[in-house]
Every structure is written in C-alpha cells, then in structure tokens.
Image (cartoon, rainbow, N blue to C red; front, top):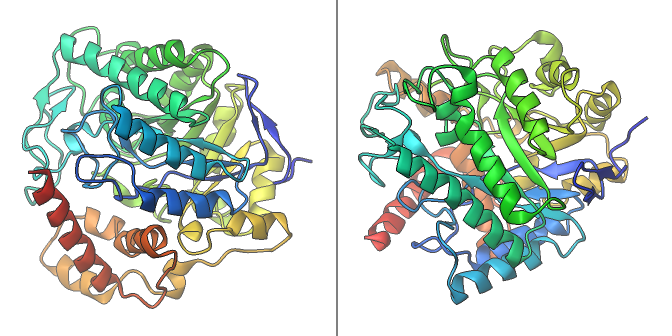
Length: 427
C-alpha cells in the first residue's frame, strides 16, 4: 500500500522524496518589474523546511504585459545577472530541505486585468464573460505571436533550470492562456490552432515540446490540466482524457488535475485556485474530501503518467485512500500550508487531520451577502476568503508570521491598496 512517505520516481528518472506537494499559490511578492525577492526566499524556505516532497510556485509569468496579478515573478526573456541571482537565491532557499521546487509557468491571456493591460492577447476576440469592466477586450494572437510565446515558455524553463529549480509546471488550467486555447468557448480560431481538439491542443503540445527541448530528457516537466471547464460548450472531460494521452506521449512527467475558470469559479480557490468549493461535485468525491479524485480515477485508467490531485484534502486517511485507490500518485496541499507551513511534517509524523481555516474563521463574510443583492460578479462568491490567505502568505514572506485573527474585509482592503501601489510603481 502506498503511503505518504513513499518516494515517487517520475518518468524522467527524478525522484520525489514523498507523496505530498505544496500546490501552486499565487504569491504577489515580486518587485514591481517582476523580480524575485527576499520575501519569496523566506516564504519558500519555510515551506522547504516543512517536509513536502515537492513545492510548486505560483504563476511565474512569461509575458510582463499579461500578469495574473500585480507582484507576479516575470521571466519573459533570458534573465540579466541581477534577475538570475535572485532566481538562484530563491531556488536555493526553496530546495534546502532536499525537496523539489518547480515554478508554474503561465500566461494569463484574456484573464489579464484591464488595469494591467486593457487589450490582452488571447486565442480569439472573446471577452471574459464577467461584468464590471475588470477585464478588457482581447486581441487575437497572430501566428508569429503564438510562435514567440512558445519560445518564451522554453526560455523561462531554461532560465529556471540554470537557476537551480528542479523542474517546471506548465499552467494549462483555470482559464489562463493555454486553457483558453483548449476551450471551444474561448478559441474560435479557424487556422491550425482552432476547431478540432487536436488543433486546440496544438499550442500546449508545442509548448511542452519546446520546454522539453530546452531542459533535456532528465528534467521534470509537469502540466496542470483542467479535468473540465464546467461550462456548457467548454473543455470537457473526454477532451481532457485525450489531451492527457497526448501529454504522456510528449514525455510529461506529472499531470496535476484541476478544473474551472474565472467564469465558473465554483471549483476554484486560492491560486493555485486549487482549493475547491463543494458545489457541482459528486457526493462520493466530497465524502473523500478530494474534489477531483473521481476525475483522476478515470484518467488513471487512460494513462500511466503520474497524477497529482489537489483540492480539499485535510485528513491523512483521505490522502492515503486516494493513493491506495490509484487515483493519485501525489497529494497537493494549499490552504493549510498558508498557516501551518510544516503541515507535511505533521502528516508524515502521523497527525490525523489538518485545520480547515475557512470553516473556523467563517471566511464567507457577511458583507458578501450585501454585495450579492446588487448582483455583483459571481466570481466574488467563488473567491471569498482568498484575500485572507493572500495576506497570510505576505506576512509569512515579509515577517515570518501569520495573523489568524485578521478579518477578511481587512485583508481585502490591504490587498487592494498593495495592488494599486505595485501598478503605480510599474508605471
């Protein structure tokens, strides 16, 4: 029986020392021009000391004009000496415990906020279906721009390899650019990158091929993939199964199963966006705590590539059951590690359960109900409480502490002010 402490040998030959991963969670701690900082070193050093076999960074952006949020680390060209030194220090801190550390390479596409870029590039001119003017009118990418982006992923992966990161993850989920290409709702192209699933997956597979060529055969390459978009006419589970088969053939070493987009955020949480809400999920899955286990079980029957499942895990019994069933090879943790940075050590030492702070703190605050009376963006409900976790990460990185007594509204105000300051500094 597989247990949490058992190592995992990836197809490329690299070995994860155990089956627990810190899933990607957006940090927002880079300099205004996208360079790594001492705060990131401190945060990831704490996590490296915490016992996880794998840490995955959150949204390292490969185009400075398409941030996921202000404060993203940006690697969109070969780093200069200062940027490389900062990346190297970050990687060293994040691997000091003998674990792996993989950045999550990402491009936000049409999910770039309008205050960053009012006309973001995307597969097609399909605006995000959310009111409020937060996201601008996208401009379709040209073939030349697509080719350039493929190479930017490769350049970023190579830079991270040289800096000491031990692998990379390509973000193809949650409605960001690669996910936009995969979805027939957001990809209306009639050229080689649109139409059939094979065409819609072309961008992802070209990115994987370019990254693999840049880092070599013995370096871990992972993909975060939606099991489905959970939207009518969107990327469906059968599509995901086929893409997983193609990824396996393309020498991907680990697929992380996720789901949802900004337009359908019920299965999203702190980005990682890995912490799912319970709506629209099979009761059997909720009972096991891991919201994507059912999808992973079906996918495991179709591919042999190792799978990582993240979302909702709190008890060691549920994690070990997912491993024993064959549904997951790696268990991803997110929100618990925003306050208990050594949560993996607790689990490996035999602790039965991790705290669920969103329940304990009542992180769906009363003021959301007031906003919903005015038909505010439905994503607000899906993202309720995320700002609270963002602020816990910021405190860990800058001060080495957390503030469990912080109110959600106070966290929201702090984050909004910080974002404005970063954008002002960017010019």
